[in-house]
Amino acid sequence: MKATPLSNCERRFLLRAIQEKKRLDGRQCYDYRNIRVSFGADRGCCIVELGRTRVLAQVSCELVPPKPSRPTEGVLFFNLELSPMAAPGLEPGRQSELLVSLNRLLERCLRDSKCIETESLCVVAGEKVWQIRLDMHLLNHDGNITDAASIAGIVALCHFRRPDVSVQGEEVTVYTPEERDPVPLSIHHMPICVSFAFFHQGTYLLVDPTEREERVMDGLLVIAMNKHHEICTIQSSGVVMLLPDQILRCSKITAVKVAEITELIQKALENDQKARKEGGKFGFAESIPNQRITAFKMESAAVDTNDVEEQAGEIIAKADPPSEVFASPVLHTPGTAQIGEGIESSWGDLEESEKEEEEAAEEKGESEVAAFECQKMETEDTSTPRETKSEEPIVLSDSEEEEVVILEPQELPRKTRTQTSSKQENPSKKAFNKRRRKKKTSR
Image 1 (cartoon, rainbow, N blue to C red):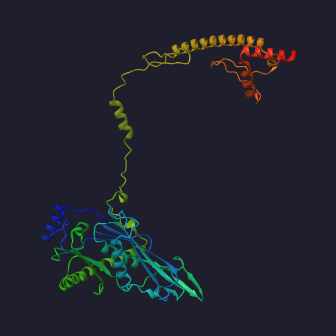
Image 2 (spheres, rainbow, N blue to C red; image 1 turned 30 degrees about the horizontal axis):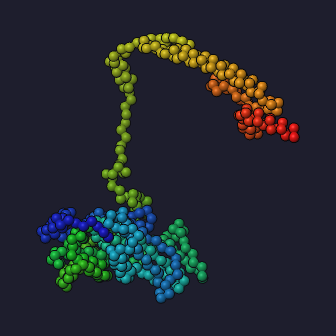
Image 3 (cartoon, rainbow, N blue to C red; image 1 turned 90 degrees about the vertical axis):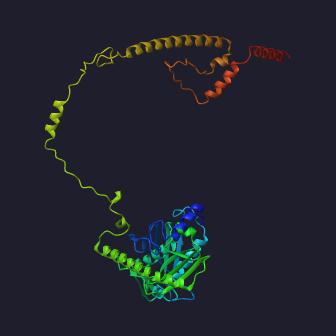
């Protein structure tokens, strides 16, 4: 993760506040942020909010062959994804050191602690077992991803129900939720991680560090424990050397925090189970507060329409009469009309100008037709008998007033080009060709 580094002024401010046992969000050194658990409509889906850090967890299952070394045990798979949606410094599709360490820590917390009975996931020994897959996605990063992911993972596993199965000989039948009620996973205990941040070589200690506090800390200690005060895993990172007394002190704080978080998880699961049985509001829709506009409701107010006519009459009586009186329409020319005493329309003038333009166009077209006929007579006198017999296209005036459609054969354009080319020959060339023919005949 490549986050923007803090300036020296911000670093000194944070360290000075920690020395004075003050935090930016107003908490004490050993206080946890508020935890909120909300479930989805499907079993095994939940969102855990630790302050502003949010993690989405989803559990799924499928039948797979078992591992050769453990033919009677199910398969557990855990995966945590970090995306730029949670923080700009997170890179997608890359296994960073932070992501690798978080996945390893969660596997030790949930798998190596034997919190799930893997033998209960066996369907047929050596052939088919249940594979339980836990996928977690970081939605928003504000520090302490480990604790939020561990809580989301154990809550999703407790909330999940796998389909019921029956085995008859070699045939395995998987029942739908409508046919048989799904079966919950066999969970022995709930391991929960609690993180401690150390400053000034272990002199100062903070529980549940935020993202800004993680940038200036010297070391981090994570302890996974259940409500029976059994330590499931422990991990230390950073450049700080811890004393045994400091680790014992952190373990005592962890026992208190784990008991509180476990009780909160059990209450959340009971409330969701109760809402599902009663058919009430459950899932993510239940977690939307009523203050938001998506869940805001307004009572419709009744409208009294008894005195509408009286009020309308009073308004009309008090209103001033119209200041202008409109006259009847005035007809200037056929097809036009004018209301009032405004400026007269100029439609009649426009019609006269259009008539003049049409007359001028007709005169121009007649003169062009006459000129074209004279030119045609001249060409007929000079052309040969064969040329006069051939069909020539008749071109009329280009004026817009007269449009003539002439039906011609398909090969007419080709003949037209040959005729025009023959017509455009130089008369001196024609005379030269005639003399040449006479010499050939005389010889």
